[in-house]
Amino acid sequence: MSEMIKLDKVVIRFGDFVAVDGINMSINNGEIYGILGPNGAGKTTTINAILGLITQNSGKIVINGLDTRHDIDRIKMLIGFMTQETVVDQDLTARENLEITGRLYHIGGDELDREIDEALDEADLQKFRDVKAGTFSGGMQRRLNLVRSMMHNPRILILDEPTTGLDVQNRVSMWKRIKDLNKNGLTVILTTQYLEEADALCDRISIIDHGKIIAQGTPAELKRLVGSGDVLEISARIEYVEKIQKMLKSKFKLDSENASDKITCVIEKNASATLSKIAAELDKEKIPVNSIGLHLPTLDDVFIKLTGATLRDSLGDNAKSMRMR
Ligand SMILES: Nc1ncnc2c1ncn2[C@@H]1O[C@H](COP(=O)(O)OP(=O)(O)O)[C@@H](O)[C@H]1O
Ligand SMILES: [Mg+2]
Image (cartoon, rainbow, N blue to C red; front, side, top):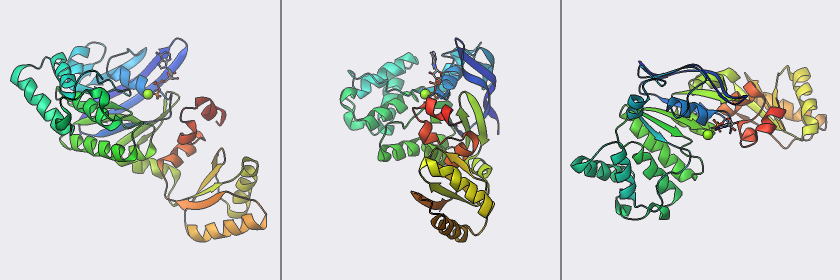
């Protein structure tokens, strides 16, 4: 597979603050690549550098052989971009929004009419072509946004948190749209805070935290970092966590990870039998737990293993995830 995008030791600072701290990434032509991380991890900053909206302090970004520092005008024609915020003009109709975007990309005449028509079809908004975008639901606005970013038929589509704030139904329908676009050969980069999204959609993923890549690979490879077997998860009041971890070690020779009130460890064999024994032991030692159970490794387990925090706990609360480290 040929390489479409390469980031080589990219560093981006805002004053003294290092938002992106030496990131390397190699994204192949035709893949869906995920950048997964909590709020403030540096996802949008990385995307903005790929788009040439900001310039890195050091390192290199090459897109289809073009350096973002020298060839940004040509790069812009290669990339479609959907921001985290909704940027459709609320006072304009769906059609007018598409018309403006088309003109920005120097599309005109019959071609513009055709592109607008296709875009409205793709977004399932043909019926609402002459309705003001301001009256649209979140899902409709997001769909309009998506087809808008594709009007110049780019080879790469970059989506910054494409489903944040959408309900489950709209989220799943957005996943399908992204997959369909990718089937036609489009390279897709998306950022997300949702582990399930990265897992369901992406061929390969970089997990980033505090501007650094902490793991890279396919979802399956990343889950293997946790170990082979089932993951035992126990949730208990904070004051019991250490006691439970010691018990798991001394009685069952199990090394565990913990993130606030959650304890996880991998059980390689006979997981259900071990689970029963652990439950019996907790009972015997009169240690109360809120829940205990088994699951197959998820990307959340990977995040806990690598950072000692759950991705969900760190959402919107960087201070907390730093404290837990
Ligand atoms: N223009 C800016 N000036 C100063 N700090 C910034 C700026 N943009 C982003 N940051 C900081 O850089 C870090 C990464 O931000 P961002 O890339 O937006 O994270 P994410 O998209 O992963 O939530 C955050 O701590 C954020 O506050
Ligand atoms: Mg962001």
